[in-house]
Image (cartoon, rainbow, N blue to C red; front, side):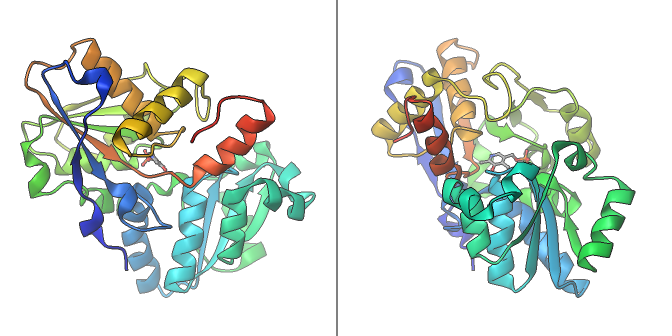
Length: 309
Ligand SMILES: *Cc1c(COP(=O)(O)O)cnc(C)c1O
């Protein structure tokens, strides 16, 4: 069983901000479970409970080729005895599965956990929430419990409400990376009145605010900072990679290039711009995602670019 007690609070001493009069801590959700890391464990927890109570035997979900969510669902299926089906974006990946698995540690891991793949074109993938497409999938695979892309639904938000606890009450700011908005919604619902939540979207787009509003109730003490997506989802730069490497060298905390690296870059930048008041206590949530580093490095090596160490 995952041990949520492993999610320790750690104070960050990082040379780029030591002169600033704020304190920065990180909550290590990445340490909860070796495979279902960080927020993906939180998001799956009550979905697994729900699927079990509905007597479902199969979890079906959607994701990109390097998705943390795909990796987490595959591992959860193995651990909790569900067959898993991954609908993966990119039909070209299905042409030569052996070759795809050689070049993609995420899919290789999911495959080894027993996940069955269906590779679909980008056009078909966009249909992921349409009734007709889901009906077709039911005809093809039989009955299943649907976990939406990125895992965000009511049960996921409920799980993410458990990230904050009595130990995190002392913080003034809670920072988190945002993909589909499920994790930040949980934090918003369980934050204390004095706490402000700042989300750092890892992608460009404006649908997030309404998505978050859908899952949150009265608390309006949150905002999204759209300045640190580095051009969009999975877009990176050498500046970002160098930052991730320097941060790890000094703090021994690994960050992933898609989510937590961008969030931490943003936090450090905001601290240096003195956006936070003097004495502010800031908590960053480490949402995991470290499984994605190997896949990203394969891509970076092909481009002869700086890699994540
Ligand atoms: C999926 C993911 C997120 C985004 O979570 P959402 O609930 O989709 O906003 C953030 N960080 C990491 C590491 C993730 O894998």
